[in-house]
Image (cartoon, rainbow, N blue to C red; front, side):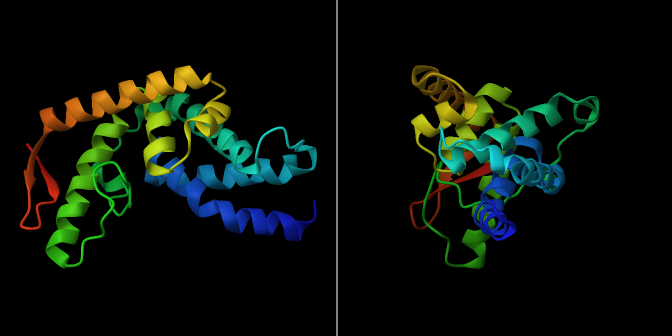
Length: 188
């Protein structure tokens, strides 16, 4: 594969992979891990056999990089603070609507910070499927291929993750409706 082809792949997938790695390993680590992922893609693209989609192959590399990082001794010593959370995410867990004014934008960022904090506390197996499904918008079959799981395992983990998220949101956040009747949350 030529360098032009790699550049096209890099340009297409980099924002998605960075966003995914921000959720899996924290925003502070995402840039370095994204670089690692694309170094591996660059070295391995000539051996890519097409047994899965290119996106699946790249996400699998990213998942492995995040899991390796999270298992490292330095990651165990790192405490993820709210400063490392990408609160500007347009995730679709609670609402797909963009907020038109500053107050609603602030409420949305606060809600996203709350959700991201809860997601970061989840077990890795649940966090990975939830991020791939809800934040990255991938289908269950794609998630199964990326994580090398059966489709049933993905469905079970996703159900557990969503159930845990709902439970933890109720325990850690005060949910309310704003003047537009849209769901907002405030940390307790």
